[in-house]
Image 1: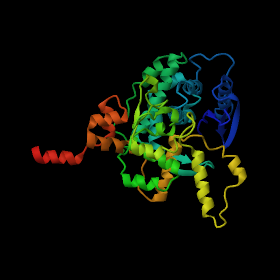
Image 2: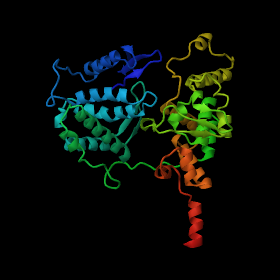
Image 3: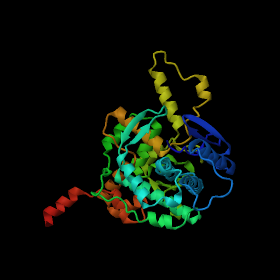
Image 4: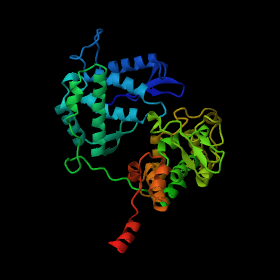
Amino acid sequence: MRVPKYRKHSSGKAFVEWQFRRHYLDGLYGSAESRNEYRTFLREHVFAATEAEEPKDESSTTIVDVVLAYIDFAEAYYPAGNRTEVANLHYAIDPLVVRYGHDVALEFGPRKLKEHRQWLIDTPYRRVNGSGKVIKEETRSRAYINAQIDRIRRMFTWAASEELIPPSVPQALATVANLRKGRTKAREPAKRRPVAWPDVAAVAAVVSPIVSAMISLQWYTGARSDNVCHLRPCEVDQSSTVWLWMPGHHKGTWRNAELIIPIGPRAQAAIGRLIDRDEDTFVFSPRESAGWYAACRAARRKSKRTPSEKARRRPNRRLSVKYTTNTYGQAVSYGIAKAGVPHWTPHQMRHSRATAVRKTHGVEAAKAMLGHESLDATLIYAERDLALAKRVAREVG
């Protein structure tokens, strides 16, 4: 069981998907009316718990009560342009609700948190498709488990700040140390490495022109996948030979950090035709990709049939007007399977760009290219030039 997300339909209405059915909520997405109905839906259908009409005190507040309040806070707190943390929050609290949902929050201490963490280590994570069939099963990594436990602790800290539980609860949970490398049975995550250009080019050649342009833009700029998915013409200053891209929403928006990404001639050539559209329209459209694939399928048919007039008049409403990091990654994975190259992820292109710039222009240039505020962050992305280290060792070692 997992907690269904509060989602937005293309019509502007709010809805949730539960047991393979879509339930529309009263009111528009983000309205108080739809949020209240969302909480009611969770209580009645997911948690199957009834609330007393009188407000609960600290001694009777359950973990479900804390979760419902924190979901409502997170939906309003995190910007609409970047919902990654909200999605990660659901992945963190869903197993917690299943195992401890109706326990009193006051009684959730370090021992139960450790028990839950051990369950995350021992229980494989199963990915299912829309029909409930398991398509992938894998163990959780140490870094992933640490991040999810941190999110649970933050939830209890927030609940204490709202006086839902006493401060002693998050203080006790803070005594649980993170899993350390070599001292746990949790799987150690593989280090993310740069991807080679031949593998990238092979995928770009077999996907739609839209996804191919996204890949080229990310390869030449080193931008984050989320920024690429949300690119709009109004964010790009094309007044000089090097375009300046200023994303409206990015990782550092919450702390008022400014991000400017230079777009050089090669990246300009990749997106030049696509960026010529309405200022507030997303440059990369899944609907345009779907249309391209439909045209390719029609061209392969012996009868050379084209998509029906009805299909052209009514685009698939299940397709969003923009890519997300998930759908972008899925499109790349499809291209990898089609091209027959080793698996890689879009974020590895950021590592590749950082490594290449560091090798030719130095670490300061890589820092400027990636938009980092400190060199420590850049060193995570930029691989050390082993060839240079070997040459130095031969000369002075």
